Length: 103
Image (cartoon, rainbow, N blue to C red; front, side):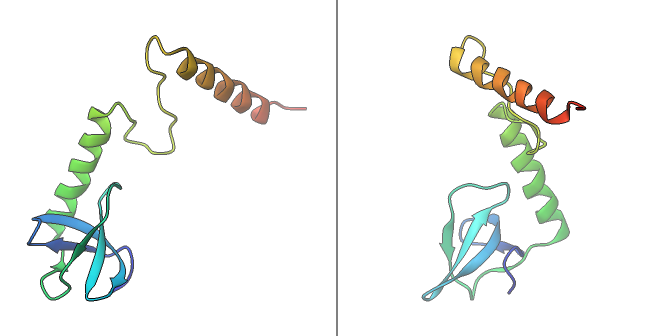
């Protein structure tokens, strides 16, 4: 099985991204990231299209609930009232403007 393959683990009833083998187990990572888990390679199977789509939608919904953008390339919004967050956002905006400025 190739790393990145989406598989279904019936023990956890979750779709995970195949990472590697470790001893008698395989290592899976949740779609969208998160804590990896070990699974029995004899029990997992390639995820169906419906299972892959559901896992992707679930990952996007979790990102949204956490206040993160569905687009991982888009920077996060600063937390209201957080001076550090606002300062980092200002620095990011200045750096972006400087990198796109025409000399």
